[in-house]
Amino acid sequence: MSRVLIIGAGGVGRVVAKKCAMNSQVFKEIFLASRTKSKCDLIASEIKESLNFEIKTAQIDANNVLKLTKLIKKIEPNLVINIALPYQDLTIMDACVLSGIDYLDTANYEHPDTAKFEYKEQWAKNEDFKKAGIMALLGSGFDPGVTNVFCAYAQEYLFDEINYIDILDCNAGDHGYAFATNFNPEINLREVSSNGRYWQDGVWHETKPMEIMMKWDYPEIGIKDSYLLYHEEMESLVLNIKGLKRIRFFMTFEKSYLTHMKFLEDIGMLRIDEVDVNGTKVVPLKLLAKLLPNPAGLGSCTIGTTNIGCVITGKKTGVEKKIYIYNTCDHQECFKETGAQAVSYTTGVSAMIGAKMILEGKWKNKGVFNMENFDAKPFMNELNMQGLPWKIIEMNPDTI
Image (cartoon, rainbow, N blue to C red; front, side, top):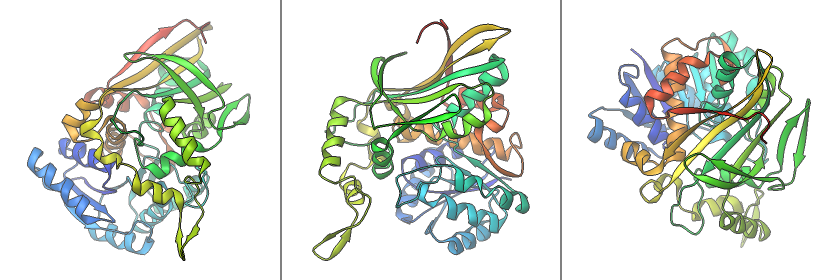
């Protein structure tokens, strides 16, 4: 019998809990915990009504290692699935080490006071996890997550050598709001407004935010403006994809989104330091996050499609080869299944699959690992069965 503890009850947490319940042959018992227990109770009631599956709920402060450890030891899960904020990755990892329980997350650690995200501090816990005889699987979302697995699958089964990777993330959804973010506003805006970075010939190159743009024709969507960002999966892929010469990450943004974001940045609303407001300390970005629409509530009103994938160029038997491997998701279809829009769906389903890999023993080791460290094929098979089917297009290697 497999028992899991899911920490986090936002849009992604809802998808993870529901998809775990849909795979009850693996996830026999499900516990859902969050700072706000009422959010967990609402998700639990939805699952009971739609799937006739009972999950248990709890309140937890994910910043408190001692309280986390106490809860984990009380529940005794086989795995902790961290869908909380990236700020809380380290405390939840520490609690797992103290409890001797495997760990999984969907996004790498980000310090609350510094707009920078990297794997350094999580990778540093490798020896702690080894000594505890447990494993941590980092970044089991879609990007990072599925994009890592796409690259690993290409390296294992499609190429002898990979030289170039472009990760392409397009959300062509329309939620009807003048301005809103597709996931946690605070995390989203910190990520998008930061400098871009890409890796080429062994060196990281930094760019100004939105400095580099290209137009890309996304299957089932069409041509969209795509902007170079830094994204965390590149950090591990440069270490694990052999023969790599360059890796970049692009994401689509509409002009309206960029105009709103630039205005908010210009007036100081993206600041992450405290300002004094009549004697009260306020972080502008946190205030903005409270004022913007809750991404978890966008499912019912969002229409359109997402397309996320990788364009990979390399060689097979000495011949130049280029492929485009991707997934598309319809926002309304995702909402009908789980009550969440496609951005939450793609992340949540991928987290459930990563958890399934661990619980079934298909991905198992001691220490801290990224997605591409394991055999990609069983994960790829699950994508097709769990609602995230992928396609491969053969491309002309001479095209950009």
